[in-house]
Length: 95
Image (tube, rainbow, N blue to C red; front, side, top):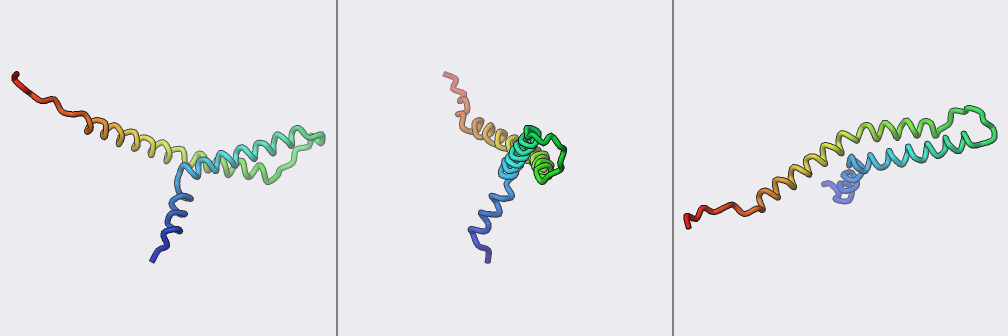
C-alpha cells in the first residue's frame, strides 16, 4: 500500500517546473558566489563548490525546459479544445 503523502511528495519533486525553478535558484546563487569572488580583493582564480552548483543548475534547467514547454503546449491545446466545445453550434433555422 502506498502512502498518499509520499505520492504527492514524489509528484512535486519530479515535476519539471519544480526542477526548473530549483535549477534557476542554483544558477543564481552560484553566480552570486562567483561575482562575490570576483569582487574580492584577492583577485585570484579559485575553483569552488559554487562552480559545480552553477553547472548542476544549468543542467537542471536545460533538462527541464523541453518538459515544461511540452506541458504548456498540451495545456494550451486542451484549453483551446475546451473553448471550441463551449461555443454553441449554429442552428439552421430556415426562418
